[in-house]
Amino acid sequence: MYFVNEDNFKEIMLKYEFALKRLETELGVLLDEYKYRKGYNPVEHIKSRIKSLGSIINKLDKKGLEYTTDNIVRNVHDVVGMRIVCSFLSDVYEIVNLIKSSKEFIIIDESDYIKDPKDSGYSSYHLNILIPVYLLNVTEYIEVEIQIRTVAMDCWASLDHKLSYKLPKDVPEELRISMTKKAIEIRELDKSVQKLFGIVKKYTDEQKNKIED
Image (cartoon, rainbow, N blue to C red; front, side, top):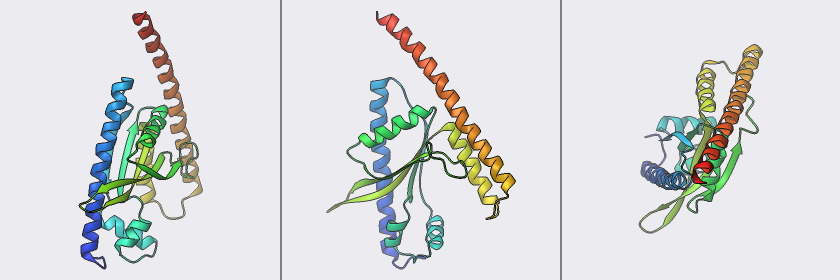
């Protein structure tokens, strides 16, 4: 075991597991109610995970930190991660608002990389929240990270991640420009699909109103 105190490490990882279960349960309830009230499911799919020991160690190494549970809690903000993938841009913000509406979640940080993409072109909406974990004698709040994005953004993020691992630290300018152009094309695709969704929604709403009349 790499950590200074093995028992402390096992305990904090158990708490992260509890937090993930709480997150999945609460989000499931919110989405079921949303589908019931709106008659529409804004989510394509959801993936969740807990960082491996190796990934946690790599992150601490990059920050030059000692292997302690305190450093994990204070400096590794995505030990618990969830990715919510939606069809349309509007769905992303619907999910963000849905999460913010929960009394179980405490928002501690958010980054809108859709309105303000990273230099690489990466787009997504990030929320870091605290989840209450109810233990035998105390309630603790555990941090988790949620990423919400469209299918197109998710495809690009996956490819960008794989390409980045194969690239040297100094990315050739030609390649950087090409990757940025592709990211812009992805954003334009999302905007076009959103317009189509708006047209379809308007048409179906009109048909529904005619039936009701």
